[in-house]
Amino acid sequence: PKKGDHRCHVALTTADGCSNIYSIVLDKEAKRSRSDEDEVVSNIVLLALLEQSKRVEINDVIKSEIDDVMSEVRNAILVDNETIVSENMPHRNMSSMEGAADNIVNGNERTILLAPSPSPLGSSSQFLMPVSEAVLPVDPIIFPGSFNPPHVGHMQLARAAISVMKKKLQNESKSIGDLSFNGGDESSPALLFELSMTNPDKPPIPREDVIKRLNGFSSMENSILPENWGVLLTSAPLFAEKVPILSDFLPVEKESSRGTYRKLTFVIGTDTMVRIIDPKYYDGSMPNMIGVLESMKRKGVHFIVGGRVEQKKGVNDGPAAAFVDGLSELQSLPTDLQEMFTMLSEDEFRVDISSSEIRAAAAKQSVGKNL
Image 1 (tube, rainbow, N blue to C red):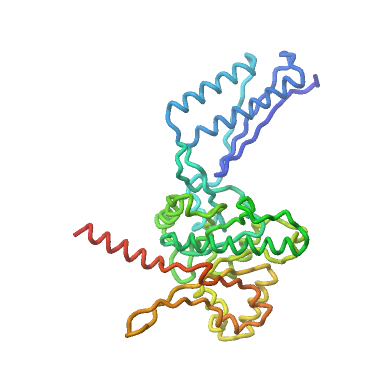
Image 2 (cartoon, one colour):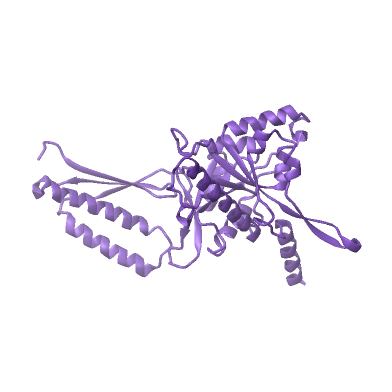
């Protein structure tokens, strides 16, 4: 054996940012071989994982069984004068949705990714867990919104956007002779619902309201939710703020494998698209608006636009639902900027429901219960 101590350090960081270091000085008098010491280290990794597994909400019986296994492992690998020392490392308050929301409002974080995780009790439900040091997937679909509340219309628009992107990816792959993208579920692009907690004209969304909206996602049936999804909490209400913040969390690519400059795809509605291309929001200047869009295009921004239903006067003065797709408004842009927008047809997406209608119905129901 070498002259110095035989040491082992195992570091473990959970998704919520909690870190622990497990250390041991091995007794050289135990006369272990190198493979024997490797086995000790492997079992310390196992002990670290078992200890962290007790942090989730599990019943006392399961915790007791885990403790028994850990005791057996320690007795099997350690000699009398060996001790595993555990040290908790300082970490940000990211262990809960509440902590994640506080970090955004307090300015400690610019964006926090919450990933769906299976219930620790093995049920079909999911809960959202903050992910420490998150990196966004390549070519993600970002769906900004207030989600007050999240509803089936949001999910249908999300699924429509994913379907369109899968076709786009497949066509791009074929154009360069890459047949690896087959368009199956395993190739489904990641979609992240983005909730900005701040607003330039209003106070930040209260933490309680944020948690309520997040719980609205996790309470949905898996069959309604997209294949690969998550939620982003941000402090970026404007697209001019979203793009640089989210771009910092994208993985670094040497060059696009599909020959495209697209880096971020935003899912928006027709009303939002109209505001994005309206010179009124750029000091009334068409050149200013064109300049902003050109800058966004250079940064790899792409939009998928879903239409909406508008009630108009119909036959005999009765209401008639008309689908507004925004195509006519888009014609005011130069052709190269029109290419930034992928417009969903009525066949691809149409939902005759809105968040305001759901809130109004919920309020009416609440009033009825109190009567």
